[in-house]
Length: 517
Image (cartoon, rainbow, N blue to C red; front, side):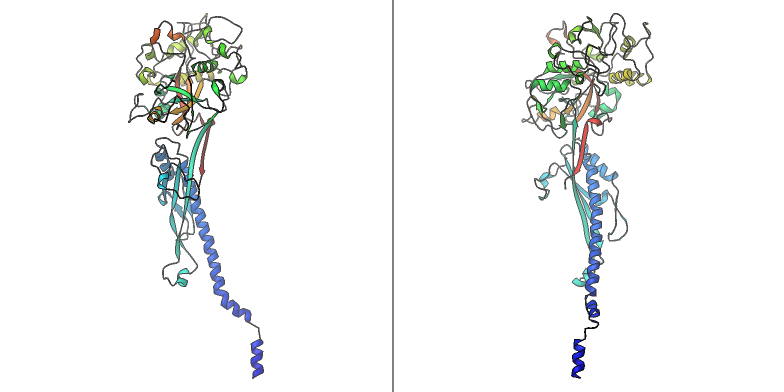
């Protein structure tokens, strides 16, 4: 009997079965736990992708515009449709805007590990730079019997959520270092442009056609809508600014979140840079702009009768402008002649200009007085009268640049071969600049637009068509009441960046929505 007991004690056959029987619940439980963790991780990844997509879609609308939050909310509601699995139901589920909450932020904590505080949150669309998207926690049914082990009779479930923070920055490059006080800036729901917004002005021809007299103001004077100034670049001094203004390849980049103004009045530099685009070289810059990047536009028709043949690129003083029946520029709105233009204190016209005279003088059949047919794209009258920029582009499109005005002027739009070759890579008759809400900014005593003030927010970047050179002849005989045309630029608004724009500035834009958390 003793031997039988000893043999049984030492017999190890079947021990593995015993160990397996003991460990089997542990192995099965561990396997179920691994499966649950994989499912939970997969669910979290799906939800996180949804949160990231929602945040990026909304952040792309945070361009600092007054309706940025409205557009961002619309993007949340319409642009993203995400699906996920392994929820409480275990089947494919939809994550829509109703399944998230969002907060708009003006700033982020200094450290990523720091929580977002109320001080970072904003409801002001112009200050909203970031968005925090939180996915409503989703119920997750586990396979592992956690409730059995804990003695809890509740179901084996817990929740999985996700959170993302995205922001947006927009910048433009190769832009002239100029800012313009928003002619359409709204103050208490109205403005001196007849209540038309910047977006409306871009969208409708009758508003784009309004001629704007941009005026350089310095010396501490108030920046009225329609005034312009200069932006700081990497260069220093008036020489670098003049080069950037005159070049067809300016190297400066500016962020929509903040630009820095440049000090000083530089009217003479502006005149030289603008007129260079019309094939006129001022004596003061005769040796400064001798490379192809400083060439004129492909169409320089300006209504000027050159007084001499000359052997050099002409200057402003070589021309007599708007000789009745002989030359005709794109001209001013008719109301400027009677000094009764209705907007911006007389510095924005009503859009009515003498297109018929311009066409009849500059585009004739041979040497006759019969005008050529007007291309269909600019054959409009009344509220559908074409803009000057549309006429200018139509001349290029339909090969009408070489048409001559009557003798003895014989002006065409072809630049003189004594100047630099025409620049065809960019439109030299367009002036690009930052639009700033000067009236709102000047309410801040720390802002001095005549000085070097950093981080000024930009409403939009815009392009303006230069309708004519900067001229001084209009002041002849008009005494001290004459505007200082030596510093004024006459332009039409062409386009702006942002959702209301026509897309012609996209090549300059560097839009960067990105995830931060």
